[in-house]
Length: 417
Image 1 (cartoon, rainbow, N blue to C red):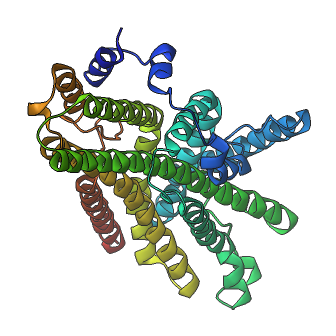
Image 2 (image 1 turned 30 degrees about the vertical axis):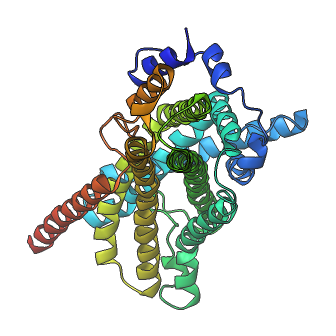
């Protein structure tokens, strides 16, 4: 099947992407490897055993598998203990303190296992992105490492403060030693004290840190992948603008060289579309996990914040709520930029390409490329939640509505004798 017909079928969703077809559209030699483009992001994933690191030696493989089992056990324990606490308690604020972290550990556990079990598909995706890296504008990727590190640092900083909050409250006299609580509101029927309290404190704190590291590493990986695709569209738009300028300078006749130029654009467009499809297919369920966590967690967290007492509790909740909103905004920011670039591409095709004066072959290439622009490829959770500004606003509205309902229920509960 010709590449042009294959692209047309792929756009309409009528065919699977085969290895043979991938080879046809990636004939351009790869100048950068996946380790070059996603180096920092992969290392962030390896910290919590989300990305197997088996290339060095067998000891590293054993360590990675052991770390994965430890993280799975700790997150599973935290998730179960938080769920039981939220289920058994009759106080809504007490339940809020359990449920806001319950959704975090649950979704983090799912993401970690999903990344590890789908490593081959993830590796294929980054290799596909690496093949695209030399096609983006110069210095397009120069800030991705800094952004990934900064995003990771801010998430870890926020949750570290949360984990140390009971200790800060004791140090600064907000509570005594007997009144210290665990970092998360897990079910504790025996009221652990002494050495057992220290053990449970460390386990809960590690669960918090690993959950947030999973989230931040997954974010950095996804955002870098989307940013790379956006850079590909930026290059494609620049190519089409240049094509319009060449046509203007040389007159209305479109020769064979212009047709070859457009074919190169079709080839790049095909590469980007397949790359986005790979991202979308792998991240659908994790986007859904993000949305469910954000709405449920933030609704309960805002109720908890309104009832929190003391400077450290207020600071803890302010940082947690703020960064959860930032996390969700960044998801939609990159998703919206991807949509915008595709809309710009559609306009450039209409304005810059002299298709009416071209040959039959050029018109065919133009039609294929236009077909890929008629409907923007959008990252979504099975069309339930699309990464764009409009759905982010709906998310904020839903979060505020749910938190207000919880607030009303809490007020009615307090008024009851």
